[in-house]
Image 1: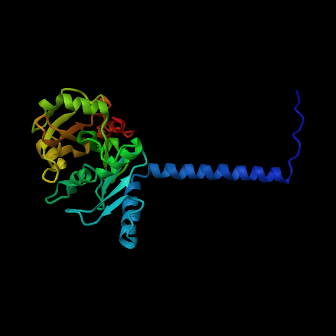
Image 2: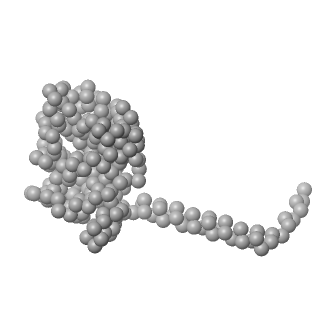
Amino acid sequence: MVMPPLPPIGARGRRWVLAAAALCVATALLAAASAARAADPDALWKIVNGLCVPNQQQRGSPAPCALVDLHAAGGGYVVLKDRVGATQYLLMPTARITGIEDPLLLRPGAANYFADAWAQRGFTKRAAGRAAGRAAGRALPRDAVSLAVNSTYARSQNQLHIHIDCIRPEVRDALRRQQHAIGDHWAPLAEPLAGHRYWAMRIVADSLDDANPFTLLATQQPGARAAMGRQTLVVAGSEFADGRAGFILLNDRADLARHDRAGGEELQDHSCALAWE
């Protein structure tokens, strides 16, 4: 069957077709640009060094970051809202530090970026409160908040970034069950977390000011210092049975043969279900 020819379109129709084509091209270009940013391993560094720090220095504004601290002890840092989730923030050095494997993290007098990240957890707690319509006085409990650094195998960016976000409810519950067995030195955790085996140790202190998790991993976990790039490190807030405040440190090592990329971020919940408890 031969279809009849389509009637000619008028000037208005031609303009509509051209506008639609232009919109498609623009959409494709924006998608390509977004994909390019996602594929750029230096995208976070460009945000830190090319936008947040210059804006703070020249205009007194941290944008697009939420905070720029150029005077922190040991080294400056920024806090940036991550595009994933309502409550996830990233803490990043203003210095060029690639990730957990960077020797600058273990040099004498190195900045304690985990301590800084814990001190800035208020960004996540406030975001969780807004998301859940929580009253201002009902903050997230200590053991709902976590900090995570992925291994080189489980990250896309080559600028150290500590994920600040809520912990997964089932991970929080497992740590509560195992709390009595977690001591002051690294030991295997009896329960798997997110399907992977982690090692754990505790820190009894209200803050991390006197305990640098990077150093505790490199110096106390056998073999870690020689293979820091394979490590993931997670810090979970904790309230111990005797009422003392502290932290549980968690470590996993990448094992690609077992499909374990050592991405401790897997223990976090970027939807922050605990905000609704």
